[in-house]
Length: 182
Image (cartoon, rainbow, N blue to C red; front, side, top):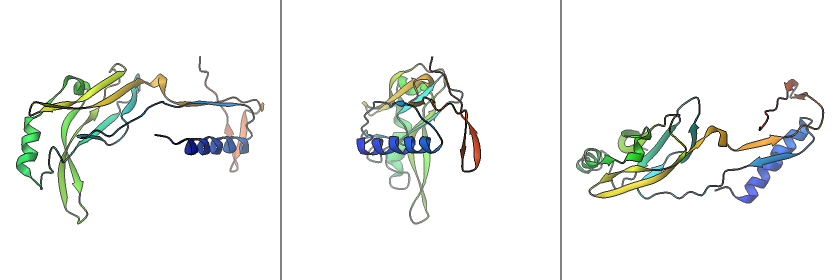
């Protein structure tokens, strides 16, 4: 969640940098309105909202499976194996995700392995909210993965009223180019 003071400071920093580069005019912006909470069993290791539909590359999505459900391999191998071999992915997880073993480097230099739900989401998966997860011991474990079109990426619009098409920054000329939103 973005705090208003951090957002205000970030916008002011962008505005000050644009003024230094010779920009005059208005700035508008759109941010993603999203709230997140950390699920008990599937712990996101990155964004839970991805902009993959229509993208040129399939983004990677990764969730660690909590050691409360599946211990690490070195801690309790029999429980680790039981979860690894006993779970079934739900239909929504079939958007390109699978159960994978993930190596961790421990603080003493040793390593261990935990389970994760991860993979590359194909760029053809339709936008929507997917409740990705699995079933284990007659219990469903899911979390939301929101897939959006690349056309919905957050953006900042800069209107150039200065008349300049080139500005100088740090001794280098930068050519300004603008993309129409139409």
